[in-house]
Image (cartoon, rainbow, N blue to C red; front, top):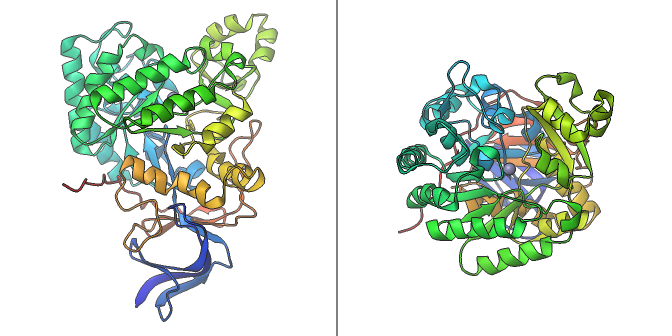
Length: 482
Ligand code: ZN
């Protein structure tokens, strides 16, 4: 057998959760041609992995990369081995929404992309723009309920009317036909908070009809987290599709420890219906600058501020003191803005990461001027800090939660595992060296220990830099066997 490239002497962690094994991997064109001993195989290029780990490229189960994909090479992601990103989470997809001049862009849409990118009338137009520009990673697109509300409704502080729901249903149908994997919601945010569950059920049903899933940023992740979780589970049950609970957490000191309750609820529901979750490996969250999140936090850092860009990276309490305001007054004065909130407990983060249904998603916000370090560090931190150093789970399980598990849950065809015929999305890393370098003080730093990264057989990251290649695709959904 002669192939384009053989990577020999690697520790193969194949994404299925199976323990690592020594061997070689062959790539031909954009696919994996063989995995294992490969005796007698020849290649145009043979490289020696020197005992480094070779794994399927990571799938970021939760992103806000819809516009960043158009803007650049997504270095925060490819630098840590991510080769596919699930976009449009929390109800806020970039498309379909074309903004007229002077038209308002309600939060949190204003934090996921610059307003100039809201230029796609149809979901298919955005996908076409991605294909035309080329992307460094593959894209697993979701359509957001919040974006649809902004598109079809003249006021967001009320439930949608029957006519508005019908218009949103048609847009979900259009997006699913164009290649969306499902619908997302973010009932926490004011732009969607007035929506009753029944409104989301209608849209989720359209996604279900096309074989999609539903991802939910819960209405509440603090005191009312259990009721909010029950609501999301009920929406998915009624619509008849799998649920992914987004960036699962319990916020606020008085809720610390309650992940035992939420995970038990998820496990019970999972006996009746498909329920999964994603999580990022940090005790701080990040979203718009808002009073509810601030109230649950022990400390708040500003990530961006439209009126005072120089405040990005500053502590809110300190800024409030300088302004002679209370923190609540400062929040009101500084908006629109974004923030990092220290509001979770380490034991909850670890318990959630260990749940068998948990996939890794960064929830990074690339448009932030001073982003949460999860944007550049989530995957390396799970591999280094949580798996290797803390021993939370073995390496093969860490990799599974960022590859095979995610591909199976989202129904990605031909990705997430090292197997003959699968797409050659690959990452090679040093298991002893891999770690996140990004910090809260200095968040835009590539992770250590990542040797190179390949998307569809083309190298996108090597020797600490992006190669400039854009071999990404819009991912394809696996067709269920009839
Ligand atoms: Zn969210």
